[in-house]
Length: 395
Image 1: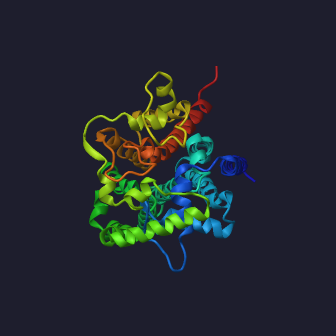
Image 2: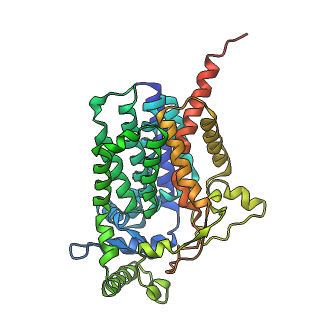
């Protein structure tokens, strides 16, 4: 067995163990207790929701599946999140290793395996581990598309099918959090920067777009057709499921506002163009807090990324950006990092018109998906530096 395979197995074992430890020992979080777990428990053959609370319904179906596969205890509800989080590590390795070799893949996977933010969210029955899994799946599929049109790949791989896979994965991510829609401009801008705009004259990208719309169709339908009576029915089912787990939602904002947040409610957060420092807290929040720049944020259930990790990733991005020669995956990764980060640093936010307990005006983790291309780039940078040191002549 190759040494790289053994190291990958060790990384997956450590990553899975850290996430399992969190699933077993972490106390129930607010959004688990009040939102995701009760919503999952309302699912039955008589009630198949298209949308729940703030986002699409995919996470609660997966949490329900976790309860059926394992059990309805808190740990049982969380175990599928642990699996999704660990699978995300593997996908990151597979993406980097195909393009840049096993060392780059091992570094990228290792960084994600020990990242404290991802460890924390992957041990909870919430939407974030599933969203990040589907985003990484979309990255993997698009990287395979790029590889198949690269001189190292082969057209026999039918690149259009990888585009379809990226679109479906992005759609499933959208049904976890609508922010995953940002993958569409990421793909489009990547075609431009990669000088592959000729692909936009072919049918495959447009079929892929159609598949994305088809996947998110149920959520679109729910936003367009849901009635006040249906919202009240959803709230009653949610309250009943919460009471069965010993949670009393009476008097909470769920009762005051109804358990539903539409696209319009989500977009009502955006107020004007202007510098917003909040996204930087995802990478450097611990450091900024320590120097007195404390973030006024109600979403404090999960830790910021460790600033050492954040600094390392930004160095990896800067190094990759500075290199003259860039392969297709590097260009795509840089594109995704900046397209998914800069818009949130350039808008002023306010409180949404519908408030939930987990809805502060500005959510620092909106840019969490940018860590995925950053880890890929850092893995590549590490492999280049190691290779360069190995070829350096000795005195």
